[in-house]
Length: 257
Image (cartoon, rainbow, N blue to C red; front, side, top):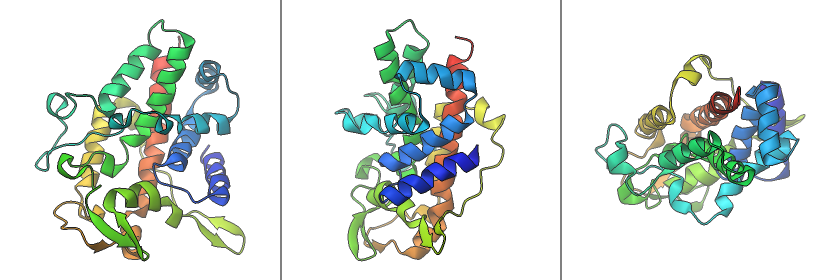
């Protein structure tokens, strides 16, 4: 299963610069989810979305970024937060409330069109809550106001994670593209037993780790190759977990329906 997902990553990497949690990041997570789903669950997914190819499913996972509801992709918390508090952090809606709404629609007797929209939304947002700066601080928009530079270009910390990270992980060599990553450990049953809120809280602590350079930074940082090296495995593991957990969640929702 992993080999197929990595092959898909190679293909999109060759076609265009990959973006972490931009469209290519979502395609990568959903490619992994496709490979992890059992055939009966995959058949229900493809029937709802009216598609048959892994590449088409992966493409559907980037759909939400074309919609106007931009406030639903993240959970922003106070700087002192040690955990997400739904009543405080999601009172006006957030990625977690939208995930819950999408799950409810998929479990209901809603129309196929509504369920298809819910499925694409769910697939996108499960990946979003694994992006460390999407569980960021409300006061600076998840790092959007933390300015720095990367390879001579002005960037924000948020843009570093959304637009720059994965492009540095796919490197050309004499035989094509190399991708240095090992699958996460403890996929099952641990990944099936936890909730989206658990996943987002896990991401919160990754965001607060020294490696991201977020907590307490005054800005003006050069996000150099040392920074990439400190965070590359985290970025890839988060995408991997997003795909595995999405597959498990869809199995819980659709298996037996």
